[in-house]
Length: 323
Image (cartoon, rainbow, N blue to C red; front, side, top):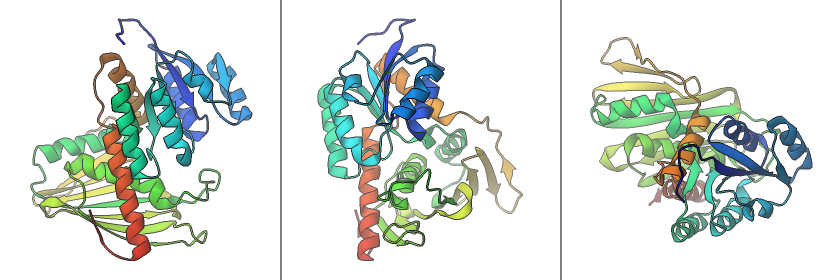
C-alpha cells in the first residue's frame, strides 16, 4: 500500500492490559495514526479505554479487529496467545508488532516469519531496548572500536516480585526477562551465543523460577554473565561492557552511561533520555508507510525465543547447551 503525505495509518490494538494501554497511549499521540479498534477480553479495560482515548470501536473478540480495515495491529495479549493471534493477523493482511516474546516455542516463531513473508507484511517484535538512547550511544562506541576487543558483558536485571504485574503462573523469569537480554547482547556485539549454561531457583513459588544466572559463550572469545531475579526490592536494569581498551556501565532505566578508560575516573556520556516505546512504535509506523525494515524484526524475535528454549534446557538438564 502506498501512503501519501498526510495519510493516516489505521491501527488496532489487541490486548488492553498493562502493556496494551501503553501502546494505546502512544498511538493516540501520533498525528499520522488513526487508532480505530481496541480489543480485550476484559470489558472493564475496554470501558476505561473508550472514553479516555475517544476510541470508536471496542470489542472482546479480536477477530472484529482483523476483519476491519485497519492496516496494522499491536498485539499485547498473554504470551501463550501470541502465536495464534499473530498468525491470524498476518493471514488477514495486517502488519504486526507483537510484544516479546514472539512465541513460547521457536518452531512457531519461525512459522510466523514464513507467514509474514508469504503475506508480504511487516512482523516486528517488542524489543524496545534497541530504542534506548544509552544503549544506542554505547553501541556507536563499540562500532568505533572505543572499547577495543570485547571481553565480556555483565547484566543485572532485577526487581521485586509483584503479583499484580506477574499474575501468570506459567511465566518464569527466564521467559520474562531473557528475551530482552539476549536481544541486547546481539544488538551490542552483532553476535549470537554458541553455548549457554543456566542455574536457577524457585524461591517464591515452587516450580516457577524467580532467580537465575546465565553464562553465555560467544564467537570472538566473548562471554556474558546475566543475573535475573524477582527477589530484590530495587529495580535494576544494568549492563557492564568490558573491552581491551575501555569499559562502560549502562543504567538502562535512567538512560545513563559511563565510560572508563584505564585507571581514570569514569566519563559520563551526554545522553538525552528518550521514550523508548514511543520511538519503537514510531519506527514501526514509519516502516509500514515507507515499505522499509525495522531492526527488531521477526528474525530477532525468533532467535531470542530459540535461546530462551536453550536456557530452559540447560536449567532442566544441568548441562551446558551448545547451539
